[in-house]
Image 1 (cartoon, rainbow, N blue to C red):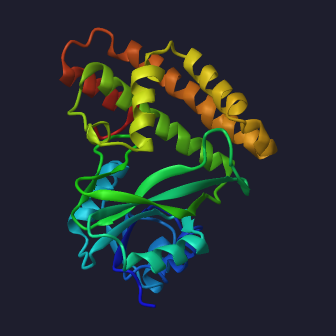
Image 2 (cartoon, rainbow, N blue to C red; image 1 turned 90 degrees about the horizontal axis):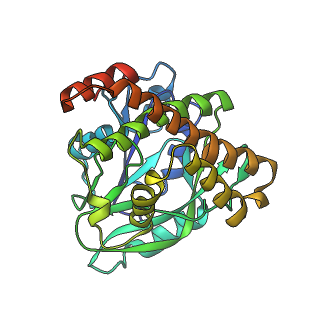
Length: 304
């Protein structure tokens, strides 16, 4: 059976730990694989090129900016595009399902949603509202874009209908806990910027998900921006952790699950709130949008 007419775009920076696993996993599925690399200093580029990927290099601003550049500039010659991260891979059942169904998709289907499993310290985090995370990951070329946001960006289908595939793909990062903490520290700064943009309208807001017909991402965004973000600082992370760990049975995920739900559901959310508290002090007295943005740039180091 021939490969589906799919090109894959992957963003990388120092991903030598993951990139071989990812690319070999995609080889039965993808006609083209494009890497948009942020000038890695390890062997990421060499490994990717040795496995047949086409590599482009570009300075990093944020995920949305980098991925949209890939959509606009990679020489995609296939009818469909797929988004993958270097630390992800498809389970064999999903690969088989895509190959089997691809040639017979109805004409009005422009997007395919995939279900993500998250692994932490070698364990599938099955509970705590973490599975399934249903994400648009495959779409007809030119029929979708990525949200222009600093954090929690999603691919948004611009037209047509979609299907949810039965199989799963896996997010399984093999880096250390130190790396996990540093990554979430950076994420917290970006999420704080999105929260302050919602509050002060500092930049144009991409509301593509909000305008979508339906979908898990739309519901989660509504809950986050209309309910969670309006709760008091430091109260909301505690309530969220209680919801995930007890009401959504996160305690069934064992010791690794407790570590993950605590760090990602409580510690990280408290870190976001702490950065919001700090930013409010920094922005005190700033009257114009330009002054607020300039102060946030100085505080975070982000290229706002």
